[in-house]
Length: 253
Image (cartoon, rainbow, N blue to C red; front, top):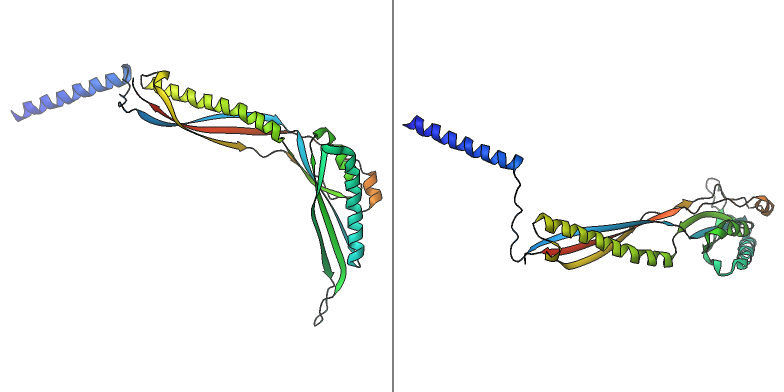
């Protein structure tokens, strides 16, 4: 009697297992039922654009070490002023500002038991130039580089272009998130009319822009600077990405 019941139980389990396997392998699985209150989803949308850099920030510096602080300062100021005067020819296309000015003592190497003394003075001035037309970059380098050394160039996208692009990317990112919400609704056996947006947050991310560095610092000799040609530069591109996070509720009618 006991053995018969055992055989019946095993057979029942085997039949149930076969039915379940057949349903999983061949039959369609019904979508889960959504509660009347709805299901809350957090979805992301993204849009990207590659922009041509249309402006640049150039950094120039000049440094002198002389026997006295007055001479070092005078030479540095004269070189920087000459560069600033040369940049005036570009008008609003190149806006320059003094970024740093400093002086420091240069001490002699003292012998053992002696106190170091000031043997010379150093002076340095740095200016930063915002070039609003990248076609003028080489000319700006040539003009200011006659009396100052150029330290580096950072290319980027102007604010107006960024603002206009972000408006376009926002619409695309929202459309991307909305499309994902509709896909989720259809997977639940519902449609677009069953989706409602409850919250939306916006974020953005910019890939580092192309950066160009001049080779070695140009020598302080003015004649050598005048003879050196301005480097050819390429503005390159910047990748801009805007992301949105959308919270939606999917509920049955």
